[in-house]
Length: 100
Image (tube, rainbow, N blue to C red):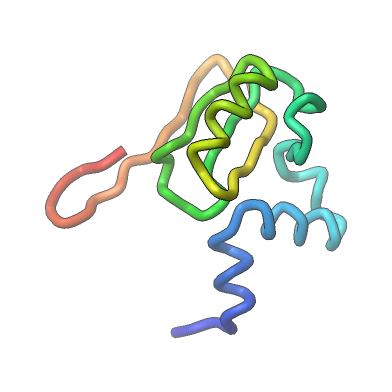
């Protein structure tokens, strides 16, 4: 089972995927995305644009924190933090070990 390379790239890159959702009328179903840190609503989530299964993901409470964190990554995604009473996270199994 395989897909076209452009579909795989779109699914791997959060920034490209969020833009695709916007371009196809699905933006209302995704967290708000920000390209300018000072326009973000805080707290927000910062994560590498390319999937890392939650690694290098952080919560930022100011534009300065976004810039400090983003400088460690070449390309990053800044998204609104959805407020819930319960936080959900996932675990996956890799090489015989559980990882978060």
